[in-house]
Image 1 (cartoon, rainbow, N blue to C red):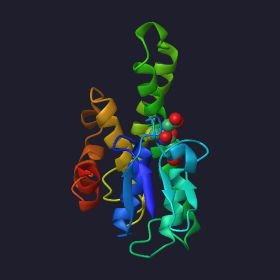
Image 2: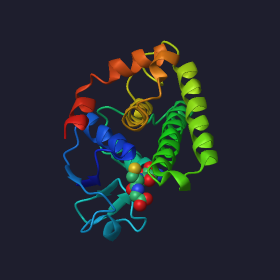
Image 3: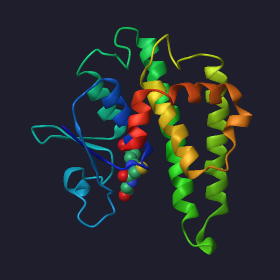
Image 4: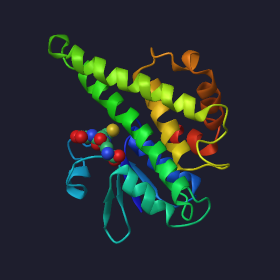
Length: 202
Ligand SMILES: N[C@@H](CCC(=O)N[C@@H](CS)C(=O)NCC(=O)O)C(=O)O
């Protein structure tokens, strides 16, 4: 299978981390939807990344759908609990939280690269506030835990680290480590995983 995405896309990173953690063979192709010659719009009608192209040509899109599909391919590890429906809900809720942080950070990024006179202070405030609130919630839920859910890695951890890496990339001035030292510790630990290092090196 082939994954289309970019190094700066947090949704792509989440899916890459799922592929790497589960040891699933894949080709990672850097393809920015806005580049001339991009094949993204040809395979995903939404023109967005990540897009996963299966060996039979089927295209899977939206990172949550891709992650759920990939998790069914093997059990090593299981990233979305299968039997415990409440644990499953909590993992998907963590993912929604992380994706929501990404969504707001992408909106902020899109806004700040517009000419200054066209930027909306209201949009910036709304989405930056959403991120601030979501980070406080994440830090509170995480406490001193090693993993977001249960006693092993899940999709929740992969989604959260992807969101935080994107904040570091696009909002380096946001000092979330000082505000949330427990979250900083969690992030430092998970950042050492080979999957995270590989995803950053490509
Ligand atoms: N909900 C989607 C969001 C994907 C998304 O917005 N990707 C961005 C890159 S970070 C994109 O492809 N933007 C191109 C565009 O919308 O034209 C997912 O989780 O896959």
